[in-house]
Length: 104
Image (cartoon, rainbow, N blue to C red; front, side):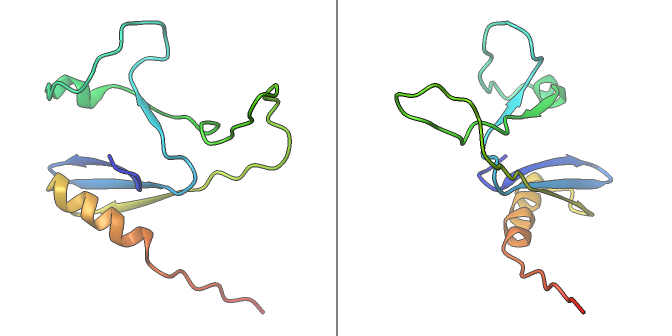
């Protein structure tokens, strides 16, 4: 996981998920429980992943009502990459690719 998104990597390839507007992901059940920090145990990689889409909306000294327009973009790419480090490098590069829009 990085500021660009996250990658699910397996022996068959990887799924790269870019999160342009949502910098925070949560790993684990959405229930009250003690926080588990990264301890490099393999089973932690199988926890559910949630995206906190409202984490970048802030108001200071006022009630937060989430009024107005919000846009949250994600992009999913499938890749043949099986190395986690290279998968994250591919994700970072893909986030900077120009995407042309042809109209008319």
